[in-house]
Image 1: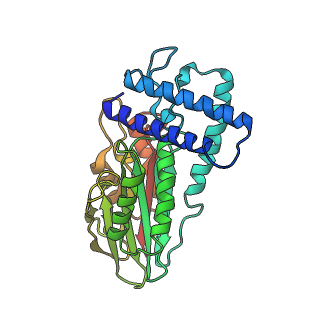
Image 2: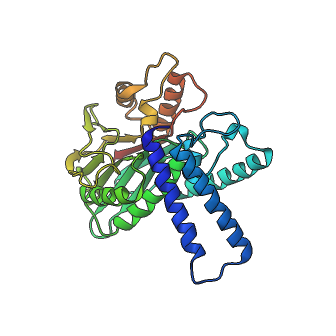
Image 3: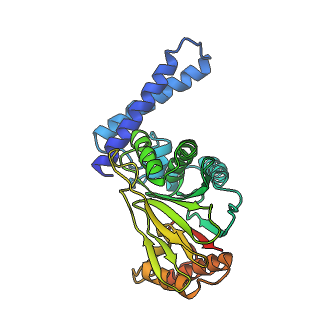
Length: 336
C-alpha cells in the first residue's frame, strides 16, 4: 500500500470516527444496543488508525496478503482479505454484491435515448459485478440539444461504482441549469475535487447534439481526459474528439474548452471507454485505437446494434480471454 493510500484511509477513518462520536453525543437518546455497537466501532477505528501509523494497515491478519482496496473503501476497519473470510461472511458479501449490482444497473439509462434525426446504440459491460463505467443522456429544456455523457473512473468494482453513483447524481442536478459541455465539466470537476479521494480520478466526455437542423448538424464537445471520440465520415474520413482539459477530481482549477465540429448525414460517432482500446492479449499487445478506427471505417454502414456487438466480440477474440479484464462501454451515434 502506498503512502498516499495510507493517508487517504487515515482521513477516511478519522472522518468516520468523528461521525460516530457526533452521533453518540447527539441530543436524541439512542437505544442501549446501538450505543454498544457504536462504541465497539469506535474501538475498531482506533485500532485501524494504529495500524496505519505502524504501516501494517491493509494487511490480512491471517494470510498476511494485501486486503482488497475496494473493500477498505467501504469498510475501512476490515482486517481479513476475501480469501480468508468465513462462509457466513462470504454469503453476506454475495448478497450485498447482488444488491449493489442491481443499484448500479438502475443508475444507467434503462432504454436507449431516442433523438429525432439520429440513430443511437449502446452496450456497457462490467468486468466485475459492479462497474465503474457510466453513460447518460441529458436533454436540455432551454435549447435544441441533448448531452451524451460517457465516463470512466480509475479502477473498477464497488469503489468505482460508488464514485460513479455520485457523479450521476451531481451531473443530473448540474445539467438542469448548465447547457454548455465545458461549463458542465468545470462545475462537476469543482464538486468532485471537494468530495472524492485524491487517489481517484474520472475521465469524462460530454457531447452536445444539435437537434434543431434536420440536415447538417453540429457537435459541441468537451473532453476531460477521456478516450478520444471517433467521428467516421460517410466517406470514411476520421476526426478525433481529443481531450480539451484534464481528468476530473484532480485539481479544481482545471479549465475545459468546447470544440464544435460538423455532423453530417451518414456520419458515425463512436464513444468508448479504455476497456476497449486497452484490452490486452497474452503477448501484452493492446487492441489500440488504430485497430478500433480501422474496424469502424470498415463497418461504418452496419446497423449500430450489430456494429457494437461485433466490435466487442472482436476485442474479446483479440484478447484471447473469455471475459473482459476491464469495464467496457461503447456508444454509437449515426446522423440520419
